[in-house]
Image 1 (tube, rainbow, N blue to C red):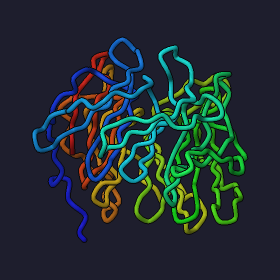
Image 2: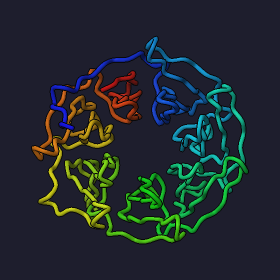
Image 3: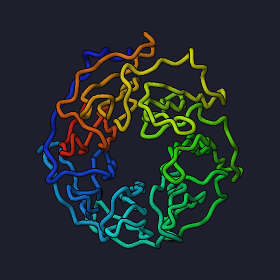
Amino acid sequence: MAVPSAHEFHWQSLARLSSGRVYHTLSEVGGQMYMLGGCDTAGRPCPGLEFYSPEGDRWISLPPMPTPRAGAAVAVLGKQILVVGGVGEDQTPLKEVEMYNTEEGKWRKRNSLREALMGVSITVKDGRALAVGGMGADLLPRSILQQYDLRKDMWALLPSMPTPRYDANINLIGNKLYVAGGRQCKRPVKAFEVYDAEGRSWTTLPTIPCKRSYGGVVWDTAGRLCLLGGLRQGGGHQSSKFTKNVNIFDTNQGAWLKSEETVALKTKRADFAAAFLRDRMVVAGGLGHEPSALDTVEAFHPGRKKWERLAPMTFPRCSASSIVIRDRLLVVGGVNQCSFVPCHTL
């Protein structure tokens, strides 16, 4: 299949949210998008659950979560949405776990985590949720790996990660759970590890070449981890700097590509939307060296080995949530010069 040209991508403005939102979580069930929680314009975690209806181009309010929260980890188990941890109204981590049945339109409380956690990373394997790491109420990172069984409504502990962290980037390829980066006490970590679900063991992989935070993370269809842009952390007393650096790890080779084999972004940026869309890596918006949020968009053409400009976003933004559904990148909410911005699709 031919890689689409830059001219084939365009933005479409969708229905505005009922209110501004950041740190919300997007989820897909049956090709439909749901938005859970987040912080409102006053910075308070909210219990909202909303469904986007493409037919009417509108947001539909659904029964709210029992527990208001922002930055929750979300996993889809069949037709049900499992919501784990996050930050509560008192700005501390949560241990509450709740599940929404999209067919019944009802919430149910589930067995809580062993301790309150925020910054949990979650995925699904064989119908069970795997929750990785997190930060506890003491603000320290955790190395915990736990598995949720829906039928038993039970959390089981699996072998812990070698490196404690929260906000890690995870991806499941076959029986291998890759865990890259994350943070410890607000500082980014370079640790990269993989869990073998069959052997129930962890292996340490070559560390991330540079420390960065608020970068883009894309896993392509070839099983490669691509780390894009972000704030690069200097050594000693050096301040963080925006970067256009790109690092790529090939899981088949078990190594990071050499710098001459990668192509840097056109624009230095952090806190942007990133996705693998129609065989191309795409980055949109974020913060850079401009005084306000960026509206610029670029996509990597693998044949030409270059980043190309795409049509800019109608609403510049950073701190937005994004998700790919049916070959469309949906970018929801976010901030632009302290104002909240609506929904957008590419």
